[in-house]
Image 1 (cartoon, rainbow, N blue to C red):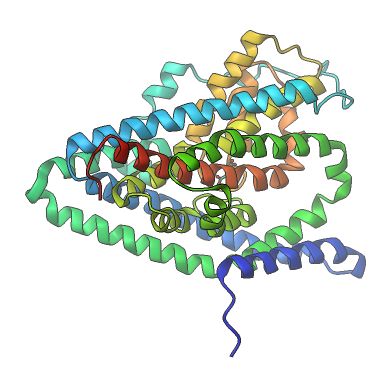
Image 2: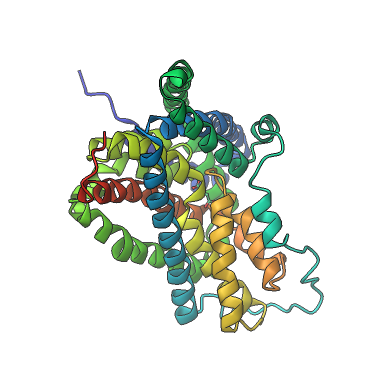
Length: 403
Ligand code: ASP
């Protein structure tokens, strides 16, 4: 009997069939909007799992780090790694876009546009808002940063309780496993969902949408490639993985990320893959669910590239102080993005308003957002995986016993 095809292969088939259906369907009189519910169902399923998945895996992950001191150490290293790599990512995006100017030649006027109609909230408010007034409300409304804040605090307290906390730990640990299983079940539908998403994307944003923005897409992919080469490869090497071994080990989460454009969909595959590659269980079960939301290097690259692109299109000067603002806000916006398709396109409002770019630019980019998302989601996932391997190695080199 033929061997059953694995999920990545099934998803690749779904994607190719979706592209074909989207490209030739309309000329054969097939209404491609019929395919839309297939993709919409998949997106809803992903949104359904993301909150309980991140919440339970993060509590279990934080509480599974043996002691509070270790948790503090692992958390600090992980957060520093996330912050540095995300900042580098925006800078790579900015530098490349400054050199290659993907928006030049697409001049649009800002004359009739209201630039500053939406004010970005002040930084202090953004930071204060991370603390939930009511954790249940945060869960119900899907406020990821508030959920993460509470989950880490909860896991931290659980770990500090020692023996007394055991029953609660076992409960959340089991819930985390259940949610990973639920995600695995949902992912069985992914090949069909991906088919629907691709068919609709290709038929509604055909070549005519893509061509004028092809330089933007090319700069995004090039910047993503540079991020892999200058940031992830050296970190993976430090953790003892050569380039091929590194990418091969992560092929399943990468394929999921590329075809679904959702890093939440790739979370469980990412966790299992890095553990197979030697990442410590306690480090990865804390850092992967955490990074799933707060560490989005692909989104950060995209914000840098898109800001320069849009400023050029509308003829808005971008002196160095504005570009520094872009770096700060892109890091914050990528921290706040959820691991679902198109999340960064929404968060980019924060960056654009702050540097005076008209929000109409978002509509311009939206036409190719799916194609850009196919670059940034694998980078978002790769950033988390590399972090788990890197922090594990740091812990080992420092002589700490880790499970
Ligand atoms: N789609 C991305 C993810 O799931 C988020 C984004 O960059 O829009 O990681």
